Length: 428
Image (tube, rainbow, N blue to C red; front, top):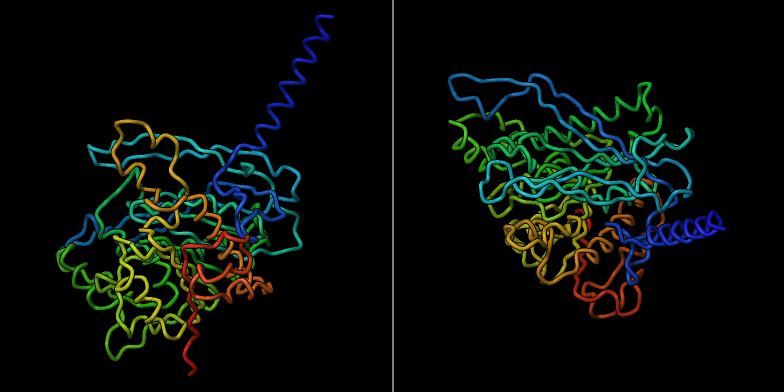
């Protein structure tokens, strides 16, 4: 009798635990009013950590005009990928990240964990299908785990998604800003090429990456980087303030558009770019000539109250100036800069912490979970069109003001407070 009673208790506990686990909200889960394409796709998601070393790179933080120093840049990346059918969709994983900033006495490093929906070191989905490659670049400072709501979501829809920890630009190793100015675009290109090579070798991703269809996603300084890689050369102003920070180093010259010189063309394998709140336009990082080099379809996401990258003279000015690209601009009204990250971790709510531990993620007027779902929806449509040939055009053919009528793909009453613009590339 006692054994039978214990068995019944165990079964009740197991059932309740299983039910609770399935109902626990994880970053990226769809809210009841999530738009149509926000939910996860048909694949279970695998995740692995890799490290790539970019050898013999200029160490700008320890160089001067008289003597240049060189080092190997070790870049840790997180790789999310399709791992099979939807048999373990509720399986969760713990990611390790930190609050705080290296070298800031007011914001000490505080580790925390948060849940995702992925299987650590899972086997990749069976061969026979190749998946477009997505490279993700965080801000300054940031983390490869800053946008798991999106990286997991895209992997579940048949993409290999690679998020970079940019050396000297993360929460735990922040270095001088000149390193980020110089290395961001170079890191993105290096990791992109490294992943293509990795999939050509005897690895867990062998023959699973479609290297002819690559997308780039960048947030803030990541946007600064991906736009350059996609063809938007920096203006000579960048050389000036970079030189002023480095004792007149000219190392950034190869990323700059110079008068009467043709800037390098973007890698033809890159077919789509997503730029969240890209930084730099207000500081003169681009001019009209440099932006003309962007010819790849680009999806911009912004808050019209962005006080970091700027809106009218910042992100929207990039959108207006990139005249040779088909481009979209999704604007969250009354949002500031944090239109890309995961929601704030519960640990950031503790009394006594620096205010910015919460405002690293949060928005003053928006629920971050809602922003996450809207981003998932639009980016699924945009990347699906340009990297997979999917028929999602109707989701990008919208009235400019979401308050005028319900946007296609959104539930009734669920699409207020946003603007949507599209401008086609000029015909040559």
